[in-house]
Image 1: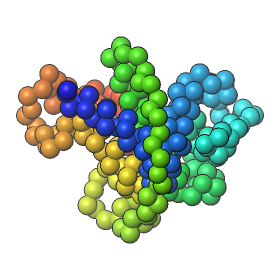
Image 2 (image 1 turned 180 degrees about the horizontal axis):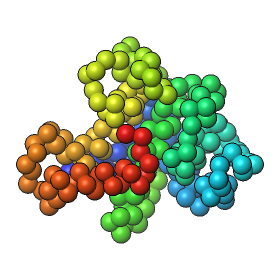
Image 3 (image 1 turned 120 degrees about the vertical axis):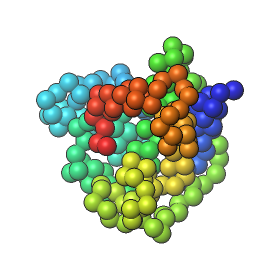
Length: 218
């Protein structure tokens, strides 16, 4: 099994397990809603509108996710480039910044998995059966206000893109493993001369172009 396939398998199992503040059932429900956002009528109307706020309507709560959680997942999955600080503050006030951050993290993780399979011409991965157990519910001691929308690791020890999910370490571990395997290739990323099908400049070009198209903050 290749390192990427192994990372995908590990990620699927991690999403099905309890996370930082969400249960396994809730994390799998997030994945389900991320897929629904691709064709959901309300999401598509908002995406096509000059402003998403011009469209009336809201996502109803599900058995696993509150209405606010549904809003975070659907907006992040369908129209991430137009999220605003005011919108985020409203969701955080209802959900708490830890839960908000985990919802964002799980949404990003499962989007990578689904898009990878789509790009490879493979069918979607069946949603995993959630495992039982309680979330860790641990807020790291080394996080604080660094000027971001949510608390992150304080100090210059990590690049901003590497500490975006530092408030939710269980979810962040899964995210970093996925990133390290699919893009940076772990420690080999620091080697400017690598022996892969794409040269280092080619990999950076693809990454930069993809980032621009996805309107990534970083």
